[in-house]
Image 1 (cartoon, one colour):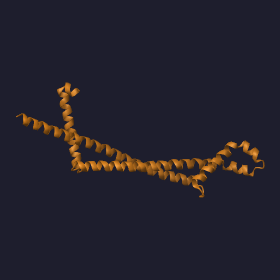
Image 2 (image 1 turned 180 degrees about the vertical axis):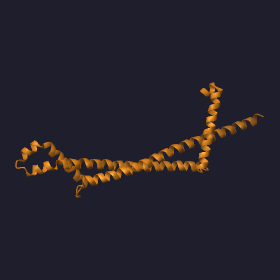
Image 3 (image 1 turned 45 degrees about the vertical axis):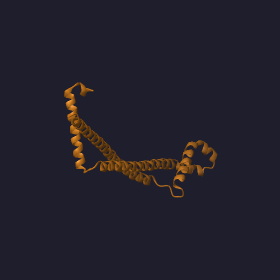
Length: 185
């Protein structure tokens, strides 16, 4: 709209469009995308890598969620283990259960959850769980960086593809205009 109202602005827009075209052509030459098909293949490849990277990232996040739950229940188990031991040694279990029902309920829910998670294997220590969590966090960080790289690269390629389409469209429009001029002569 502004370009239609002001010749100076229209000239500025044309200059900026030409600069973008030059940048696009330089990018294409630098990365050796000789044909439109090669560029589209690379774009498709990056989309697949993004999808794969995202899936890996989601898997690690799911593992972290499970591990955090296991850490929570292990802490709950250890915090209430002494109360449960007192309960088992108590002569009046019913009275002890009434007095410490909250702690015993937390202990029993933690044991149930940990048994479901670990099966017949022994319950891992907090130290082991924290080490595994640190490993998963490092892996998540690596995968996040990889995912971000692919996402940014996809955006870059999308811009290049759009610019190439615009260049080719302008070129075909120029050719059509030239042929129209020749017909009018």
